[in-house]
View 1 (cartoon, rainbow, N blue to C red):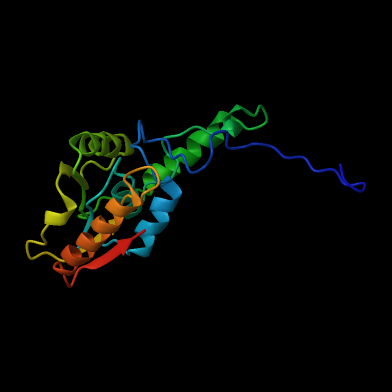
View 2: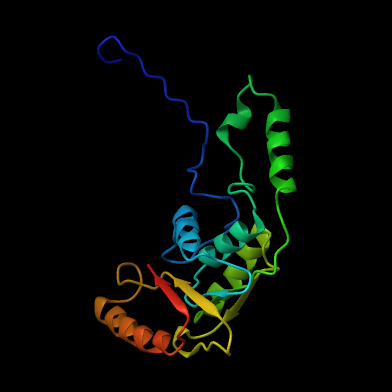
Amino acid sequence: LLRDRAQLLIDTSGEPLFKRGYRTETGDAPIRETLAAAIAAISRPRENVLLWDPMCGSGTIAIEAAMQMRRIAPGKKRRFAAEQFAFLPPSVWQTAREQAVDEEIATAFEAYASDIDPAMAELAAENARCAGVSDCVKCFTADALTISSDGRRGTIVTNPPYGERMGTADEVEHLYRQMGTHFRSLAPWQVYVI
């Protein structure tokens, strides 16, 4: 209550909305799914251009790009607090989920999610499976500084370590210099680094 005005706030989400419901686990420095989705959208994923996150961690950027290309509704795998509201019949939620599934499409889009840590590549593969995009996202172990274009058109979209939770500032500065040199060798690929 403030100056004869009452505000009533109702939590309809429960878990924060950035939690889409497909990540079983994350690495040491996870990116929020909503931020990964925004970065993927800015990179303009398309069927005829490989999207590659060479420092994928739990695979979130590649997964979000694939979900966009498949038109998979964000939050499809999660529950919402409002599902427990007595005045909303369960059929409302069921209908909305069915409509979302009806809007999904098949696509020839391809994303690579690679990481130098084999455990992260395995985690990314599991998360892609849980998100329903393992047909679009290929997960494997690779050093970001050795990847090659193999003559394909491509876009790198990545969130490298930045010296807070992973690596020291000196290590990160050295890595960034190496990344700049190596990623230029992939030209004319586009590169998006957060």
